[in-house]
Amino acid sequence: MTGDAEVTGESEASGESEKTEASSRQAGVFAYSDEQRERWRVLQDESDRRRRRKRIAGWAAVCVLVLGAAGWLAAPTVKDLAIESGACDEGLPEGGLDSLRALSGDPDEHLASSESHTDAQLGRYHCEVTTVERGRVVEVEAVTSRDDVDAELVRHFADDGGRPRAALPAGLPGFESTLTGIVLTPSCPGLGEDATGRAARLVVEVHGGGLDRDPVRLLRPGVALANKASEKLGCDSEPLPVPAENVAAKTVRPVGTAGTACAALARGPLQGDGWTVEMGTPDSPAPMVSCAVRPSGENGDGDPQRTVLELNAWYGDWVPARMQRQARMDGTSDGEGGTRAVTPWLTGERGWATATCEGRPAGFELWVDREKDDSDSEDRALDKSRYSEKEMRKALTAFAKSQSELRDCHGLRLPETAER
Image 1: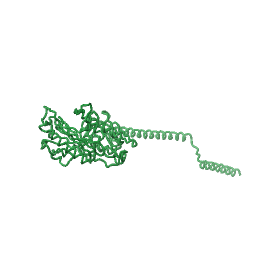
Image 2: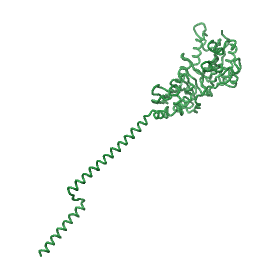
Image 3: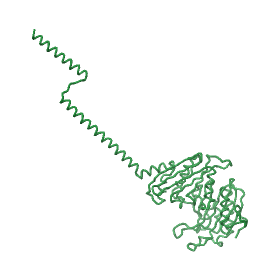
Image 4: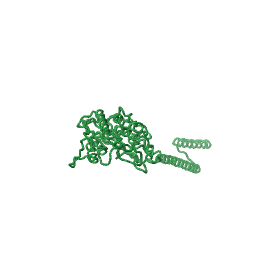
């Protein structure tokens, strides 16, 4: 009996132990020895250290990439490309700023900034691009309101600081300015007409850092930027054709002017291969048309010979003020302190005719160089035996009549008598 009791007691104890182990496994609780727990702790510490090293290495790699990207973006050539691609509301032609920088004296100079602003309500657009060292490389100012347009043209044409050099080449409406670089005057049909019935017009001044002395070099970027200004200000007009690089004024022999706005020079004493006519004849109405005659070839410095005769047509409300200034300079006073500002005149060097075109004043001017310069060819000046006042009158009359017909002008007035 005793043996059976012992066996029974062991069986019951073993059963209890198995039940306890089973319940512990079900509860997820295991009994570990101190050695096992210590080994587990060491392994866990090593795993944590590995994870920390991986995180540190990962962040270091990210920092390297970020710093590398920042350095790449900060590289001048990349920054130049970024500025150029978005300059003036992406209005510049491809390679436009490269040309401007090269012409300004330092083709490797880096760009610093570009900014633009549009105020459609006031009819104004502005854009400027600067370089690190020289500052402005190109700047555009565009206006459409009649007051601003008139003020800008008066500043260029009637200001005592000078007058435009010539109308723009390639049939473009505008002129080379002595005050800035070039000025473009495209139409702006999207803004309709003003209170007096005059069609709206856009005036775009284009300045170039160091290029104002050679304004035609601004034509390609300038025309593209004028098109952008036209778009931003709602002109809704056909874009002006962007000319090729280094476009120049059209030059012909005097006989080649026949059938053009400069046809008054097709006949007269200045004929043959010894003379060249530079024509600034816009394809659409513009404030200026110019025809300049110079001896063919180059001077001792390798530059074209100086102009000896000019025919210019001027259109705008500023014409009487320009005539007043010229009358004072020519000394054509009425003897009572006034001037014969709006009365056509002809002197030995200059003649003026007037008309009204599209409701605005127009003036037609002929100038002849009578100055002598012993340092160069005698062809640089025209004495009266070579080009007389009679020839002046004939050329001015033909030019004024031709321009009046082209612009549908009326009230043409010509000089009555030659003054000496």
